[in-house]
Image (tube, rainbow, N blue to C red; front, side):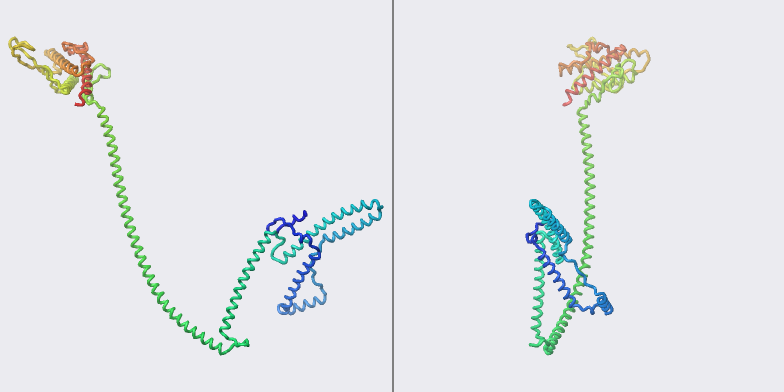
Length: 505
């Protein structure tokens, strides 16, 4: 039936499939169900009315007014609507009457051949009527569910799952009610047993035995008095113990507060000491870290300084030989030497040259032949030793006669005297410059003995009066400037050679 899908569960709204017994219910069964319910309601109402007397709760004047109105108007009681009445059924009855009239007219006006066709049409109409009756049957089922809903606290219809849940709920309630019933019965049984033990009632009669009742009361009173006295004594004892315990509690709380305070003071003191020690150690650690960083920095500085010193040529640092910015004059330790240079600067430069030669001679362990250098700054001197023969007074080198030694002091500096002896003064400086060049030649010979491949940039002449083809005499003016520059260049080469070959000694 397509109409069955219209019925849904009132709890879960699931579509329902009706049982065949509900589909086949008829009007008689429905009326019996309704009449039974109405009969139960009427009987319950009559019981309530019989139990209650209107005079007990309705004032007399209102009750007389109610009876007067009923007698005068003869009002009929209210008729409740019957569940079996249906507007659809009335409409169906009217439709059936109209169809019967149509059938009679169809049979009277048509002939025998046409009666069969009309009968088929009537059968089709009857099938449609059956479907209409099915709709009315569903309405009857709806009324049945309404009756069930009115009789209970649950709305109907219900699905199978909802019905099972409802049954389980009722079972739980029933079990709980049974437990309550058993509890009440057990309590009632205890009361009855206690009543039998007291035997306050006489046998065969429902009256209290005065003697038994009095004896029981006296006994209970005595027991109650003794129990009261015992409880009073116990209360006093408990109060004394409670007071003692409260005093002990107060003492313990006081001691606890005192110990707690002492503990806090000790913890605070210890904490302060620990913090002070921590700060002190951190400060010392910071100072030591700073010292360590300073030492590391100084160590790196010293390492850098050592590296610089290792790479430093002390010889070239002490005797710095170069040229001026115009590359015209030779310069030693900042002093120029050459023509048109002031005499004091020339004398200082010559003093530095003598000091350099003394240094080279000592590093080479060289002993000069017939010469001795006397470094005295800007007034340095060269002592020249001469060997002469006493017979003819001439200087000899190797002879059978006994030679004699004499020395001549050559001033390696010039003065500012402008006299007749000026010319001789310059001649003396020329001789000193030639002797200086001879000493350089001896040092060159020593170096060549150490390293035969060494060769100085500028060659010294055999007469020891020129270097690089330029005269070393002061009177040569411009050539003297170039020869002095060549001399300083050779000395710089010698210094570099000695620094490389004698640094490990």
